Length: 159
Image 1 (cartoon, rainbow, N blue to C red):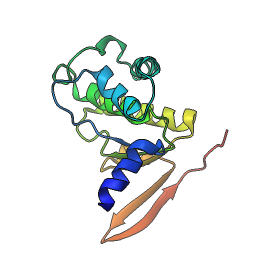
Image 2: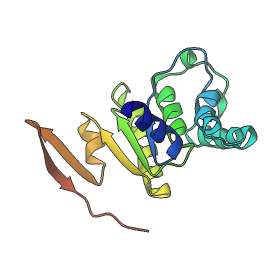
Image 3: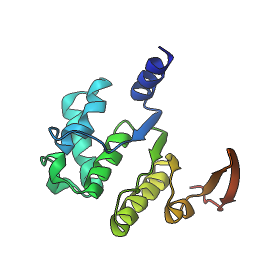
């Protein structure tokens, strides 16, 4: 019961979003991005406009009606990023957002996440094995022997 209430709160609050690229083969990217907005009560026209803009922003304006099986891993990951931010959350949780991507595509997803962090003052909580991705973050924590240790922090300019 508690888990159901928490997941419902995450989905409806607009406070926390989760980047998850796993989805079936029947839904187009535009539908995958629109659905959280529709579920939360956003009108269809407004949700469609916002989803189209976000998919354009992540470089997928030419792939709106393609099925997930027709998208590369990097494209699916960018759809997941757009879906996560359509409700304009304050916090995004991402588990290995670049884990299954080639280095070039991983760099693109990393750059996109950092841009969103700066532009929208979005808090990112990222779990990764990628030293490159971790090194690009403002603060890094490491889990070792069941304990959390601060690895490092960078000076952050507040705009």
